[in-house]
Image (cartoon, rainbow, N blue to C red; front, top):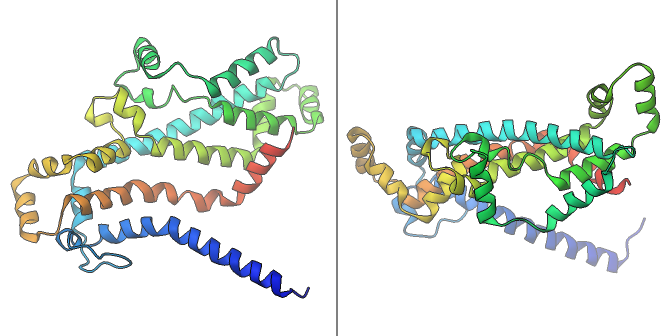
Length: 297
């Protein structure tokens, strides 16, 4: 099909806009990575843009030598895996129950769920509730409060309702219970929506720093994101560096390459790259899962 001059101009404008938007989104991440590989003292001079001026790995050496940061990384990994699995499981079970027209009070439950999407009790009532549940300063305070997402439940529900009714009826003729239908029939056929919502949930758990900063005071239970937030908003890293053993401290003084900013960028990379590596594995399900879950009624 031959394109007119107007079509070519429009295509060129669209490609230029996409390039500019893509560059604006990608450059801050790239610049942070460059600074993390650059000498801290040299970074303070400014002018670091697309490539390290004085390449060094000292920033990452300090990050991986600090057991507190590594412990935070382990907590984030555990929280993401456990939180995602339990959240997807609980949400799928809830959504499957909400597809049953014979469920007593189904419409009432749906209204209650939707109300929670627009209104919440607030920070103080939520804190009091968490305290009464004895979840304060425990690992489960990062998992249980967000166990079920109403938005994800609605997507699951519309996806399940779009499946042929004959699947459920055939399974029941073969002797399947509700649990059997869900785990043997429904969930195995829900790969795209499962992968998509699992990605959304994993990103939420990996990036969340606010809840641990409120409900957790035990440093050993803080995820890497909360520790990163503390680093970016204070000079805590300088205090941690001063508490390091004398050999490591003298080594840092001798190298004179590590500053708070360069160390913050290195910690940011360690906290960001792992979740980015998940995207290529679920990308083929991403668009399909979102579209199916959003279009079917």
